[in-house]
Length: 273
Image 1 (tube, rainbow, N blue to C red):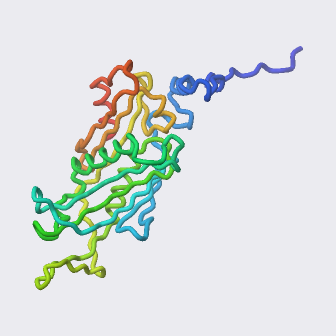
Image 2: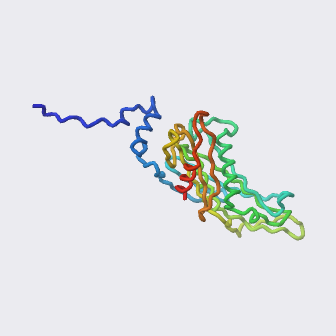
Image 3: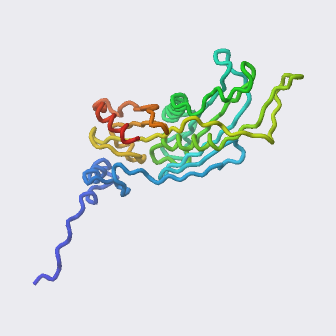
């Protein structure tokens, strides 16, 4: 008699080589409504946040979304308001993707993805009204604050935009500006570093990024590998009042891919709420 019991069926996802056929490898998991890292399709990675990470900045925060790590530092400087907006200050965001965070980035001038991320953050700041630039004006037509919000990715593993929004908002809430008055005798600004005030955060924007596989399977919080294999990528930004701020959808990676249907975009927006 045969004393050996038959072997259990070999899992299909283990029979597909990840390096040689990464897309088929991921598809084998997606068919089972799961992902290679063990998450469900609608499951976000663990997020950790550290406030005040940079002692020399006026405000800072470090966030980790899974392995993706972004640090944000905010420096405030005094400047003159523009003629077009004499009662407003400035917010200047910048996203840096250095080679240290991933081998896909090269030294030199900011690449296309870094520039697109910086523009996305600027659009979110404007559309969400997280800070009203009128609050940054010290004296109309004469003096205002400019906030330089520098975000650097230390470890890139997908979903950069969500991490940047979390780091930016936390850093803004951590920012304290010194009291500034204009001398009546010299007409020059006088800064009192002993008295500081926090920024007034009007809205709390939250980003949720999604990827689509084969124009049909929707996953949230994609890793870098999932982003590279997906057919479309979309980020939805809402605020704490469930107001839709931005729907950001970069161009398709290949011209043969069909665009996302409006029904699917509406589904994504509902999930983000």
